[in-house]
Length: 550
Image (cartoon, rainbow, N blue to C red; front, side):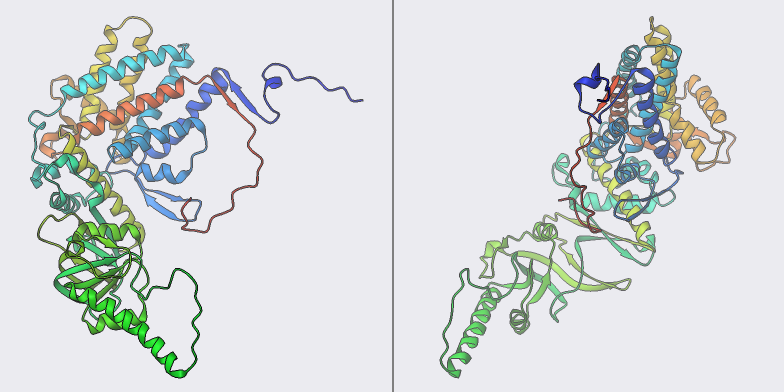
């Protein structure tokens, strides 16, 4: 009989195959290291001169982007501590729609500085206490840096909208922000409701068509549907619309039945009654005043024949979400099956036509008058990757518009706010007594990550620039930031951002810094990692490309 040692301690409590890491070296520092790796990936994509990342996800789809939210989503991060940072980035993306990179990079920087403090001998709880005081002070100072007069704005004035949106769009598409901001602002203002706080991001749609360039991009008041009309009628002006969700076809009966036919005459009559029934239905639709039929399902041959006879234009929209948006644009109620629509169920459009843009046929639905609910930005570009990246820039712009509808306050951009926060927090740390002061000083130092990264990504000397910025801010000019346009003036790259017109939204900064500090404190609070043995069931089958999880 072989001698086997009985497990003791935590081994005796947990199942075989578990992992248990505890203590500073194994748990805390390993967690910090994983978070540092993640923030190193996103950091080089920060700012207008940020580098692109090429990410290939588990479905072999290629992403070429500098949008941090997309990068961390597609990376499928496994490490539990790094996942906390990913969740903080996602929370920022859902709350504001921009600033996910700042959240992840800043949290990574906080943790890196915390590691230095731990190695110096501070306990994580003292660091957390210092960081909590520091974020409270940061938010207080951030409120004082708000530009005077920016509390009130008319969200329908294009210049004011573009001022606040420019920085968010430039960080994704540097050099093209002027064209894009103008397009996005126009689209947002068109669909802005009477109460701007109710602005819905979903009402600004994006259609991507390969070919042409950025100067070919346009805005359509209404929708642009990829695909052709079904019949031969391709154009209609000022027409009423009927929408049938389940398709335009002769419907089969609910129950199965057998028909006994005894002569050729009966067979002839049988098919004639089917024809007559379909014609009766289409005629009823035509008589209701509808000129355009939109189908959510298949369109039958016979039904199409009668639609042509009664001069009805037929469109097929297979996506139920698109169909819902179409109903919203035109003010139509979708009917379940083919029947005569009531006057209330019909919608109205100014024009609907099939156009050819860059080799692909699209159906353009315009509804210029009345309560227009949807605007579409038509993006043009040479490759799919460029179009995807342009779409992300538009999404960021639209989300920024939504944020400014709720809170229009703005703070200086181009790292001016961060340097000022760093300067004031350092002064605050000198007044503190106890070990907290070291953590507050390190928190202040973490803000230098933003100007340092902006300078590094643009190929400038970071130490030189940070010291110049501190010098300018100490002399009382709190709006000096980095001009990546490489100005030729004697100031070099450090300039007043109000002359450059680079502003960030207060809410974007507020939430980004808050989420980053919360994520960093959460990671620091962990002192043990206990992982159970993974379930040994059959592995998940590989899904075919392009399938959703559910």
